[in-house]
Amino acid sequence: MKRDLSLLSQGVAKKSEKEGLFSINFLGLWGWGPDFPFPENYRASYHRSDGHRQLDELQNQIKGKRAIVASTEPKSVPWVEKYRPQSLADVAAHRDIVDTIDRLTSENKLPHLLLYGPPGTGKTSTILAVARKLYGAQFHNMILELNASDDRGIDVVRQQIQDFASTQSFSFGVKSPVKLVLLDEADAMTKDAQFALRRVIEKYTKNTRFALIGNQVNKIIPALQSRCTRFRFAPLDASHVRERLKHVISAEGLNVDDSGLTALVRLSNGDMRKALNILQSTHMASPHITEEAVYLCSGNPMPKDIEQISYWLLNESFATGFSKISDIKMRKGLALVDIVREVTMFVFRITMPSDVRVHLINDLADVEYRLSFACNDKLQLGSLLSTFTRARAAIVAAAK
Ligand SMILES: Nc1ncnc2c1ncn2[C@@H]1O[C@H](COP(=O)(O)OP(=O)(O)OP(=O)(O)O)[C@@H](O)[C@H]1O
Ligand SMILES: [Mg+2]
Image 1 (spheres, rainbow, N blue to C red):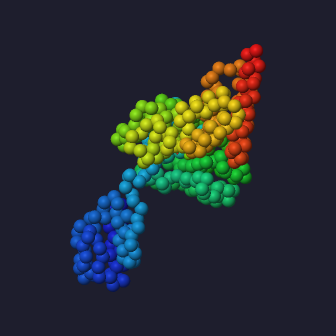
Image 2: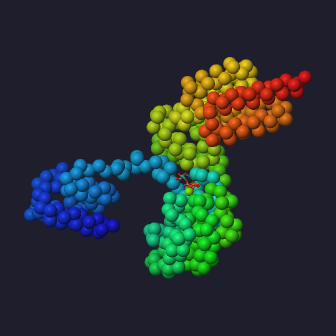
Image 3: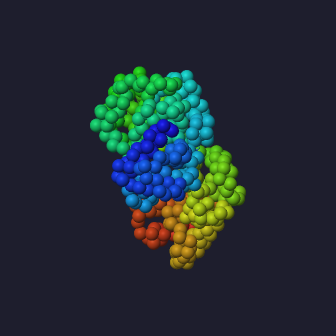
């Protein structure tokens, strides 16, 4: 690495000489020309980790442009990437799955893998940690990583994947001679491509393992599923999300109170990526992370607002309920779909005859379904109120 950078910097120096430039600005000093030898500290400075960035800056200055280089400070890295587990031991939850994969990796008995489950549960992180463990520094030479942003039609299976899988690897120093084809978001692959992959997987098993990752396992054809060992990554349970968040909070030195942490865990719904993203955006918005700050920043209704809305739905007349809910929606910028989702949770908790609850929840599900197609908000709010009006009438009738 050191050598590469120093060669590269020599190249730039030569280029500037050729172009007859008499001065380059480096370390704030002006006045070196082609006849001046470059001092030792010139090259040494490129040996620092941010050598590439400095080189870009230098090249831009040589071209006479003002350098606009993205900051590579750790501060600018989103926390989801900064705290992505680097090794299998770092992966929170799913201990049984991770330990099994760890053992298979250590014994060089890795089968073809199919990891599936909802977003932000550590599927990609786990497989990257496996690759790191298998190949160490040669990591990038030994894996072919394709995700939904790459073309993965039948042509890619026939050419790119087959070419990679069929060639023998000559990497020195790696523990495992088998290569890894990583098909992230495999559930988005076309059926044709999946069918073509069946034979490829079997044919090149000797020197290649396939790891398929997806959210919906039913979008992966049964023939591929049966060729892989399946592991389901369930949403992380609250205690694991809390523990991981505490780790990030202490590493970043954040001021988070207990109710704020509980709100983060609750809003994440077992999605660690979501938890970290809300934590980071709330931290940007307010230095002290409280329950209110978390709800405000993520645009979710506060539990006390939901209680209030539920009270209106269960007690006020249609017209009053409509105007009060419209008002709070406007004032607090709440989305009707969030209100419906949270009110449904509230309906589960209050006591009412079970047949009334069944109908009510069914109707709420319809409202939520219609809202997902961006229907008229006002009409759907009316529908929400009518649903509750009907339920109230049923409760009164049941009590008689
Ligand atoms: N089990 C976990 N332990 C620790 N961190 C996790 C875990 N799961 C997710 N994360 C955090 O969330 C981020 C996203 O995780 P990852 O990319 O592995 O999710 P995924 O399961 O592949 O999701 P998707 O299905 O959306 O691709 C990681 O960078 C990490 O910070
Ligand atoms: Mg992923």
